Length: 317
Image (cartoon, rainbow, N blue to C red; front, top):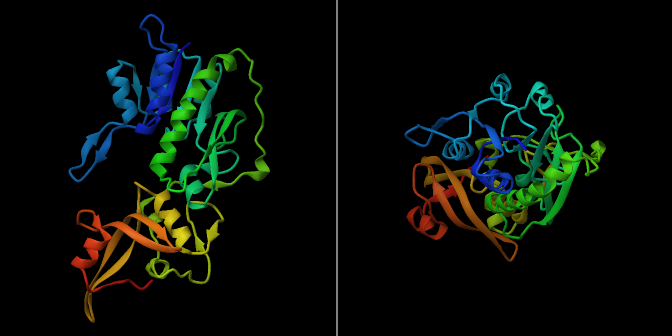
């Protein structure tokens, strides 16, 4: 079996590692190519940084391609493609080049939460259960028929990082067990119920913003009137309650992180700064901040921050 793996971040490494371990024969890896995002500047010093999948491939001497079309121009022959958080659109010509198509791991119970941010959406919206779906992709976003699906509980203290890692680790086991029966035609695919589909969008830094008035009210155990639109979930809003804000903070941890504006100083002598809320919890239906980070500063506990900035107030917005 010859596999091309399309993926980028560190949390999909369990998938490619298990495929390599399970299907290697006589020291020869089944992974004949990797398609991943190209190196890009990262950090304050803007050093060129390779993706986790790119680094893995170089260590295993597996050819690396920085676009799916670049792979298509190569003469490498592969039976099947495996897609896991690649982060780019795969052209139809590439999909059709694989005799058995491309299987994609999507961390939600499709057709719910299609798109780029399904794990964040599950936590932010208060789901008690989510899961992952393996589909055979077509040219529409997360639209193809379902090969396999499993459910996973969403813990009460779950963050994006913990839930996403667990979903992909479990999906790796499921995928490794089904590839051969899938290729042998022993698995019956089923269409998604497209009428029940919901969608999410790619999260950017600005999506982590929480209006300061919501934070202030939640820290007093109050919920302001009206609805708060969760921008990365299409047509979705919730009351800005302490419970909703606490989930939102966890949903965007560690990146991009939830943040708000804070006024430092008093009277006319004040400055407005961005405050990142790294950790928080609920205590008697009140939002309690645990760890924060003022722009340009190191993370500190909320208690330490409050002592250091006694003249502060949540900004008007």
